[in-house]
Length: 315
Image (cartoon, rainbow, N blue to C red; front, side, top):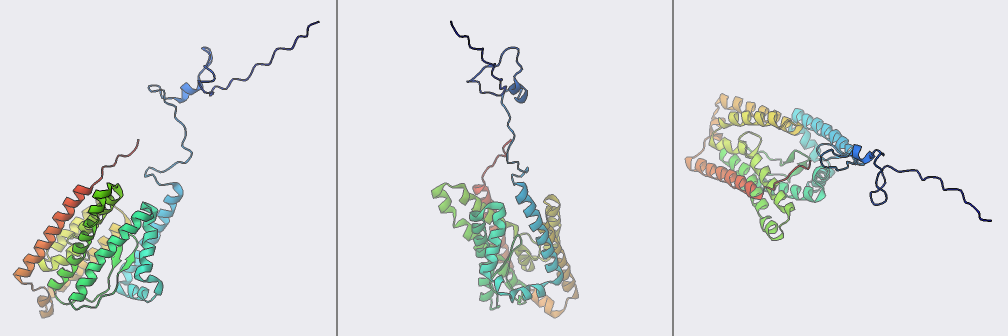
């Protein structure tokens, strides 16, 4: 007597099974086809870690927005209370050069990562040390640089000698800063690493931006010896940049520039002997300032062109 075993129950069909295991029947709808591109057949899978359009995760973007709000508030307070607020901050030991550099590195690392942030802050230090060295050469007591995240750095000094000395101090920062950025060029050439080219490009851009002819930027201080009338043109250019690239930092710089331009214009209108003596510049000094100013613009612009890295946004 032979035993008969019942027929096995049919196995449920997985419509998303791999092609190597099973081909869909002709009468069976292919679920993958519904999820695929009708032209290429490529299957699109949802991204388990969604990002924003700028490539920044949502949590980090929220942190960046909160930090930006605090930085805007700090900038507005600094604008309102001026030098007195910074003098108060100088008395706190945590706000030393090394301490504020570390804070800046941490702040910039949220955008660029810690390596690039550290390199950028070091280039900022080289730029500011140019001001410090020239101030002390002029016989003007100067503090060590104090760094302000996303605003650069500041050096405290009572610069009231004359417009020529002010121009020398103003241009010393971009001169040393540009040399510091270009000093990285051999490393970039030998390694071929885009990191170094990007750091050089950013350093040159920093110095070129500071050459805008509007106070309190370095270019505005150079205009004190060249032509103070250029301050108005520089302010108009700064307004245009703020409209094209609106952000809290540009807005704060615009407010500071507008206030300082108005203050100096009003001071020059008084035409007191002290003011007239301050802005009296010898032709040879004016020519030297103009030559250095224009040379810096050319070197920074050409250097940026040579170190620029083409980037494509992935679709």
